[in-house]
Length: 457
Image (cartoon, rainbow, N blue to C red; front, side):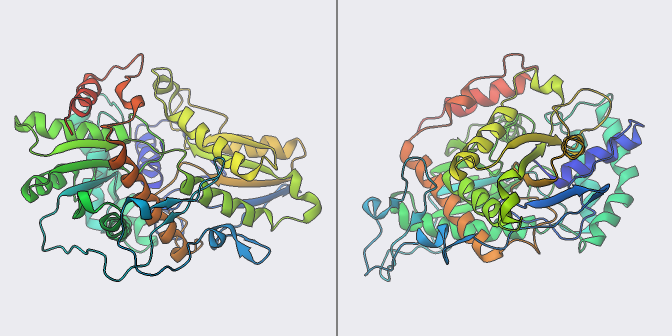
């Protein structure tokens, strides 16, 4: 349904099946029944298809940065090793030229001030995401919390229907997870990225160190509320709610931020730490760089004489038009990511943004991915590169196809750069977060926006 990805798509399709809503058969869909577990950032799988003779062939993509003349764009931006310099603000350099992707540089140093977990943390970064069941036994609770989330969906008699749907669908979803190893490794990967992120932050921003990361999932443990309790116990001075969704939607990032507000409202107390939020990052240079690198790599697999004719299809999870018409910014922010990626590439190919995982008979954002592929093939476009553009932490099919080391380096740099820039900006949230959807029907959203915009740093 949204950028939340595979787990959400599978759960929504399960709900639609139970409620006897017709589901559209997709040529391209990301579900928990595929071959490999989900991966956090980044962020891309390309798929090449040649349409002809009623046959469509798919190939998974992306093993590391694309090579140009023997040296990848990422490698060309790697900083040289330097003699020991104590990290400070002057040591942070961003290689950024006319909107091109930037690489975060942290000088090599042996005597920089180091912090350890025995020290009381000063700044906490709460990494927000939907999460995924770690074991088969977690599946029912995951589904039940998902279907109970009114920020994500509204169902008739939801308090009764949600547990019923979850219980009925659990065996099928458990079987799908069993096929990919018995659970989601999203917690493990988020932890690895969090560790790398705070290590960089301690060097880049010693004034706000020590930094500590916390994981806050919406539908599995550690829940957002549990993470907040730990943060309060740690006695932090500052807390940063950091969404792991690049593009904002009221149903994903909005739901996680609402959970923070609800925690304090239901507990009847004010936070002891100062909150701010990184609520979106659809055009962050390292995110754009990763997409562009992998697209270039995949284009190289097409015959040279056909390469400029390849249609790049960017596919994102769709939204019901009822949500879009209320003013949810998700479609525009996905479009912004697409625009920046194509700008980074220099607009070498025709491209379109399409939408997948429609559920039920109500109108959704279109065109649908499967229909777009069929339509292009019927019109003689036989070379297509499919790029999932709104997936970060829950791509079911990426583990065996992405270069893990390359992805992890970019991910940690991107996360650290986002948090460091946010700290230096001294802003509570983006200006976009202060604006409610013009036709918003959720009063909690307004309270959440007020909660974050009224904090005092």
